[in-house]
Length: 349
Image (tube, rainbow, N blue to C red; front, side, top):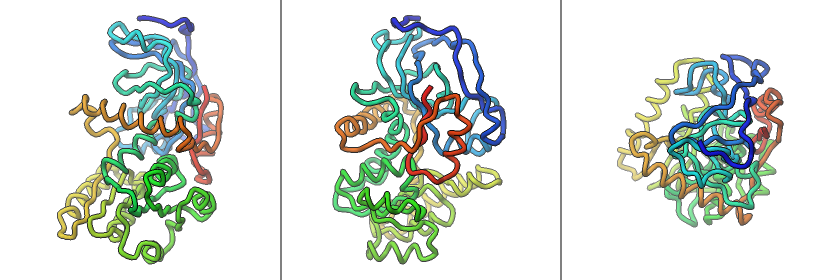
């Protein structure tokens, strides 16, 4: 193992999710510092965050989550303190962003080099954190899944959320008209961002959207699923694409998760086969991670690199709703789950 001039601590602090508990059941613990093996990196975490994934994991409702207890945290930004024996020693001392899925809510953690990208200097850690998983997701859905072109019109559900907030900025920069579906309390902020706001709970949502896009929209980005996916597909113009990237309705429920996922995938295949030129797909951030690792890595570095450059130049901005010390993870999670925020809650170890 190779270390930087910064000391490698003997112990670390981390948040542990012991089981299906309320946010108050989170535990703050200490543990021996982990040692990187292979090409892994030991990172001193500078910023991590709270997304819908961690909220679902708290309820045991995230598909494929590990067995309890575990440390949550889907992504992070931090400095590399040490590398494993097979690692790149030039990474020591570099600021990096890593997609972790779990484990980021800690002062230090070991991460996989293949899921890690160097953060350009000049970007604050907490700003970079807002666009790691959210930025890759938004960029790939817009440019790879839906292939939206300048001059087109899209509908974004969850427009006030972490992914939605980045997606609408990327789309606006790309010359796309954005209709943003969110609760009315977020509409003023959406208007200020150049977005046409609509209420996702409006019983006349389809008619409301068609007032702005009479022929339909060119793409819909849906994080709700269920019946909303049917409405979304109906709102597409000929040749349009529905991108479902979450099934919040099912995840927030109590039944098995496998059936809603399979139904969503089946609907996408069926709807795409209809003779109307429309397409439907389920976006999976981790697709190809195991089966096509070289392509996964190449796209991660390329796509997150685009987003970081736009952030560095001020073309897009970080949307931070609140900042909390890692030791106040309980209050941070409670606020994130209040669904009153516009932006992402950041934890600062």
